[in-house]
Image (cartoon, rainbow, N blue to C red; front, side, top):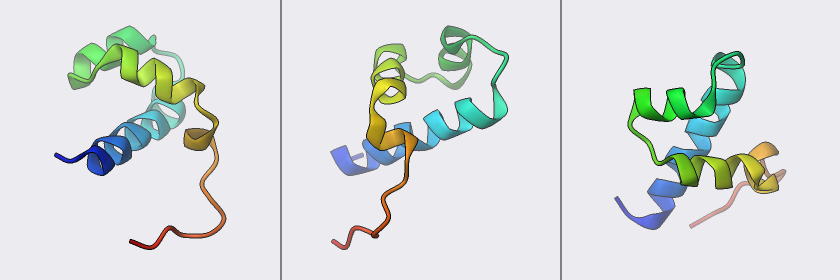
Length: 59
């Protein structure tokens, strides 16, 4: 997985955590899905993961 795919994966996990697992703790969700707890914390605190960009990014 390249770095863009990793970022997209963690962004999708953050969205899933915010919508589906509101009452669960983050550590349990990370352990359940086998994702890095520290990266999830970073993504949850980062504003770019909270709001989708208004313009799509072209590669």
